[in-house]
Image (cartoon, rainbow, N blue to C red; front, top):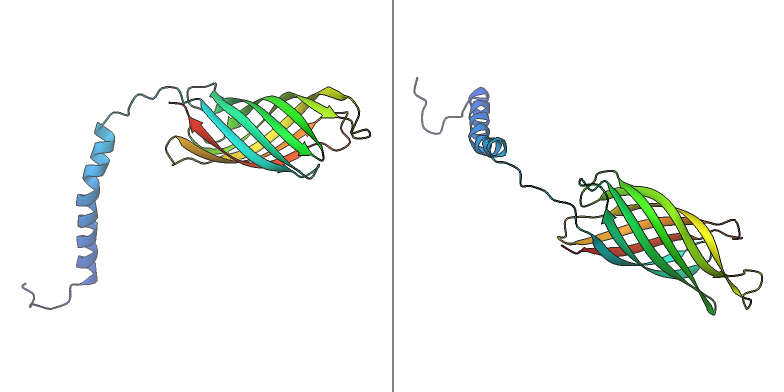
Length: 182
């Protein structure tokens, strides 16, 4: 039966035409995904970076540097050697950490959590003018590493440092950026 020019298309026929158009559009995409081979992926790149933050416990600014070294080929485990300087009133405290983190999503970005050990070159809270001492510390870290900007990865981190000698354990919230070396 011929329909007159300008007559409405039945809803059932319209649905069939939309389904056919989607199938024609999506079949090449699906076929390409099935027929092409994924590129060989090597190890994730080592990243170098810097961060700035605030130590909420000591109410002072913090500046730091870090490396992100992948341990597993899929990028889910990384070593994070890092260093921070806390700018206290009239003095500076230095923190060196060796941490391991697990990236929940692996690869270039996502949430991560981990911990490690470190050394802190600090002054006594009771005698700020007194001698400096080196303390062994433990830390936990949680963060978010963003991807999608090529070799540049912004990050947001919270780190808590524990040492029995501290009156108040440092609690740092920091923003940073890392740059993939390859």
